[in-house]
Length: 127
Image (cartoon, rainbow, N blue to C red):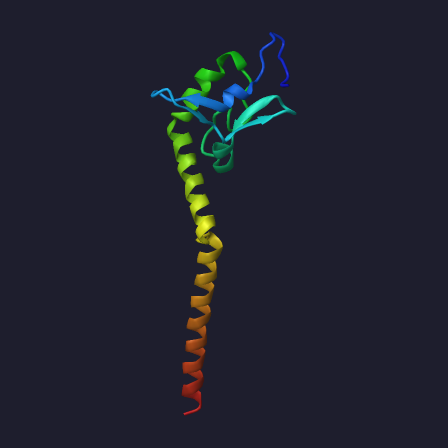
């Protein structure tokens, strides 16, 4: 059960789903509820800090206005950018194409370059 505010309103699992224009009902898997603060957050926007929305910063708990606020948020440019960033991150993690891989490749290339340069300069000294 979720906490009720002074007017008796509260978060509901119903809010974790949304109805599309074609009538299909889909999950909002990135909507997080914090029991300790009795607020909801947008996981993607919080992770990528793409928005100054209350769903990103302090959390949202104006339960009578939750449907309108969620609709506004999920259609915002910043939210869509965060969604794309999250999808890209998931693809990179699953394919091993992370920043670490890029940095490791750069380090290897630099090490090879230094080895070649050192080898060539050592050759010249021995002549």
